[in-house]
Length: 293
Image (cartoon, rainbow, N blue to C red; front, side, top):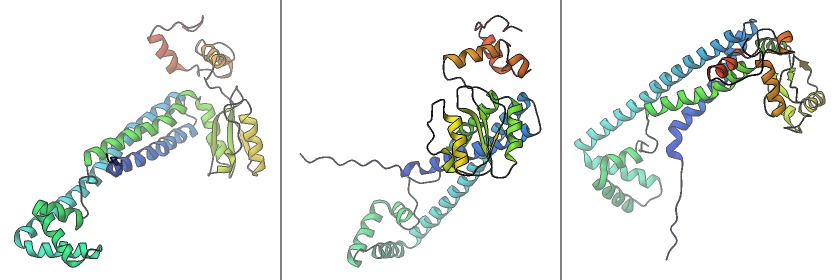
């Protein structure tokens, strides 16, 4: 029994995939720009977060509307060309048949075979044959405005979530210091983490070599990044450190912060993760003594 040959192509995804890539990229860049811009004005953490969320909502709506209008214009153009082709088929089908045959001749068929192919295809679906081979329109890549708009808005939101997450967990004072430091030409800004990595990195332009030969997920990440920067003659600016939650020890640090215990109560007044505290307390999650303050 002959083996069935199956092929899986993804060209039919190009409409929403293109919109998704543009949306995600714009979500990351524009929301990060809003967050950093507000943080540079020495705003509070809540102000930075509100500005970021506002940018996310406005950006998602803008991307969806812009993508819909753009793809709707493409769909209208396709519909207008199809209407014109439909009228031409109704008025002079023989000329349209010759036109289709000439297209196949240009693609390599002999004239007699080209005329036979054109005749048979037009007998089956004249408009579809001309739409596909003369106009380059087919159902796989046809414009779908609503699909493109939804994909663009969703991907923008996903992209914007990354800089928003940074704004939510890192104190505004550290963000502000980082933004101020990046104004120095050709420097890398680092905020060391308590576990040997870093919680923030900022550069004024791309430095791909900075990330080479780094022992990721180890306690040597920060130190090796500093050394790597020196190797490529890139100045390093260090801003106040912070911590990330990725093991039991750092989880205990988070609990200390939520409880308002030292060193957070003294070193970072007003930065005891208010959003996280409210979230946990609303769900009756018990915290250590002092957390109800």
